Length: 148
Image (cartoon, rainbow, N blue to C red):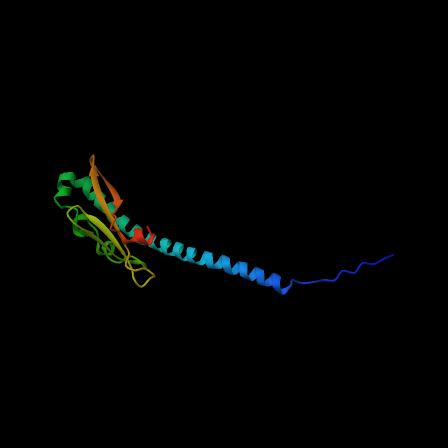
């Protein structure tokens, strides 16, 4: 009767170096994508902060009508009923939310101390058929940064 002897062997140094190299390549590709994803998820706080003001402008428009709206009745925080907390910094990543212009333009600005470069999110209204349609303004710096 013949007995077979199995010699237990581990991985060679070359095999381990190949695995480490593959993990390094995958990490170098995944880390920048993850950091960009993190910034975009943080920027949603600015988008949500502008949404609250946008809704208040919508309510003002519905209650005053398009003629009064064009005359500048919904272009300040006091006219739409926003409190200072709605127009100031609202969180970790929001520097400010501002209403400006006769037709109110809502601008959210990112906080520079929280991994942003003062990127802005600007919403402009278009009035058609008795309703407002909001759209991102092309001068929003968040578009070029890929955040909104």
